[in-house]
Length: 117
Image 1 (cartoon, rainbow, N blue to C red):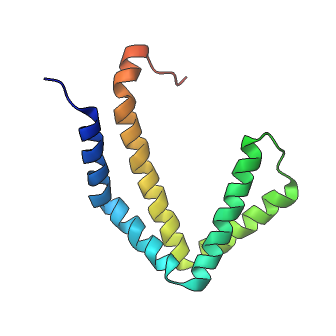
Image 2: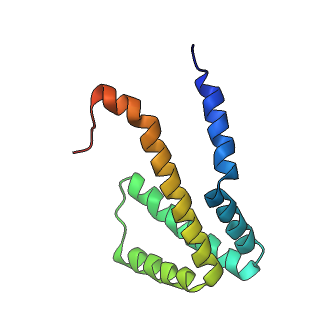
Image 3: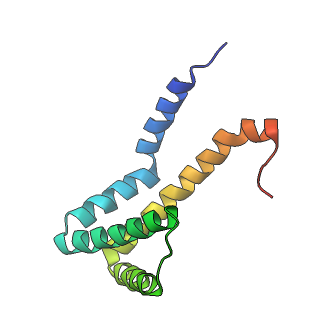
């Protein structure tokens, strides 16, 4: 019997939305967004991250000054309890997504062999 892969993907989406990891992530995200100073700090952190990623992807060199500014921003947001909890929740959700990706890619790895050295 053929399986509709899109139905399975939609079921997985719903399972993710109902997972403890997503629920905690959503809760912490809402808490950060509900606190104007935390939101401003977190938005600044995200903007710096995105700018550095865009520079990297376009082949531009990241200056020492930019690295130092990013490190200061990371240290600052990690000291904010709510933002730190959001970042922990993001990390937990990221680990779930990585695990799901490994499961999803398993048939192709078995077919072609692992491309990781």
